[in-house]
Image (cartoon, rainbow, N blue to C red; front, side, top):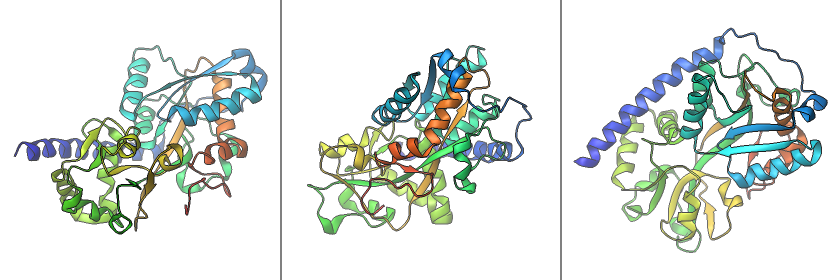
Length: 317
């Protein structure tokens, strides 16, 4: 009974989260009216600034690949602070509202960055390199730029899960044999997981909530974000995990991804602070990230980037 009460509390949070996204979706369509500068990046001015400060959700090993390429090309230092989506948004909002934003650029899931956009955190700036990206991912008024998409799926321990038991759909997670053997982030604390569960309505229609309740009855092992889940699988603490597919490439050990019939994907955006202390360095970093060079570096780590013709180093992707 206690689990059902907790689940209802989570569902209440999900409904509020979904409602806020609906309103923020309108804000994305109509814009906020801020007429911030959209001048292109100046490499010379960026070098004078000397550094770019980034807050984001990108795991450090991936950011280090991007950072190495950017710093090597321009000689500009990248100062990166990473946390899960909820903590990134909380810190950025707190600093912004206090009038002391410490960041030049923020990158993370669209749902979270829309919350920042609602408060006019971002300047209007679209990297020229992003003009070739699919139109369906574009922010209508140029405050945010999508540079990759993340696909949430099911990872498994390749040594402990038999080939015949590998899930073929999300519904397979409800099999009794997986009880207490699935890892997932706590949706009451992790906004990206809350968004994932809410978006299941797109796949399951009115039955999405029944699925979420049944998943809760499986008593999953809860983490604070997607990032720790591969480690729990590799160590055998859990056999399955709901997390990002790209972690299969980024983690070493007995881990693979289940070829599901359907996946939910979410764009990762990047935005320039409207009060950036290093605006040119921020713009130049965004340009590099969206350039073919930057996109290739990211794709080599298993990420699904948006530059046409560049594919992830993920088997059968």
